[in-house]
Each structure stands twice: as structure tokens, then as C-alpha cells.
Image (cartoon, rainbow, N blue to C red):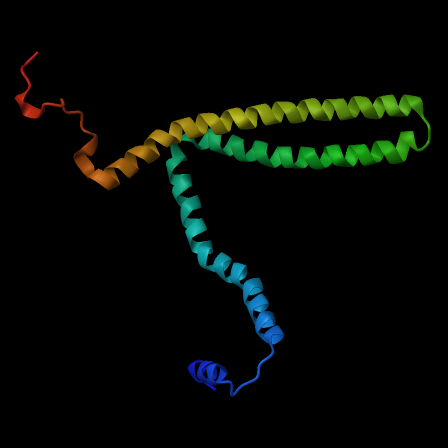
Length: 163
């Protein structure tokens, strides 16, 4: 049956469909919707990444360090969680006070390394953003107002007196 025909029969009361079936159908559509939207936006995401890479190309070393530090920080967070579990299951469970001190010192070293990594990751991200933002806004301005829009002209145009 075509969709329009089903709708007309429903309005006239000829078809008897339980509301639960309709709700279930809509729930299924809701479950599938994010997947479909994700597939449709995948090309746009790749385009954004490519565009960001072109704008950050002059700052490739800084960008690459930023990627490395972000990856390293993710590993460090996992190492901290692992170290907590190791400390609890090891020296704390065995009531080994010197072992607890050793594990605490290692944990402190990991925390200091993570804080240092976090500091430089944030610093590099801010510096990269400050370097790239003027290029992005300049391009957006040129797209919006035309190629010659960024030329500096006196506010009075060609009628300004010579200085």
C-alpha cells in the first residue's frame, strides 16, 4: 500500500493500527537518524580537517607538537588510572608501607609529567589559534566583501587632503 493511501484509510477509520506499533516505528527512525546524519556529515568533516591543515601548514611544527602532546596526555591519563589500581592492589593490599611510598612517588612523577604536558598542549593550542585566526578572518572578510576589501583606504576616499 502506498503511504498516502494508508494515511487516507487511517483518517477514515478503515485501518486499525495500534499506537504502540507507530511509536516503535518512530523509535527505530530515531535510532537510525544519528547514523545517517553522521554518514552525511563525514565528507564535511574531512573537508574541515583538510582546510584546517592548509591554514596551519606554515605552523606545521607547532601543529605536530600539539597533536603529539594531545596523544601523550591521553596515554598519561590512562597511566595514572592504571597506577592507582596498581597501588591499591599491590602495596596497599599487602600493607607494605615502603611500597606505598614508592608507588606514591611514581604517581607524583606521572602527575608532574602530565601537568607539564597539559601546560604546553594548552600553550601551543593558544599560540596556534592566535596565529591562524587572522588568516581565517581575513579570508572570510575577502569572501564576504571582495578581494580588495582589506586594502587600507582613508575614510574620506580620494578626497582627503595630502598630509
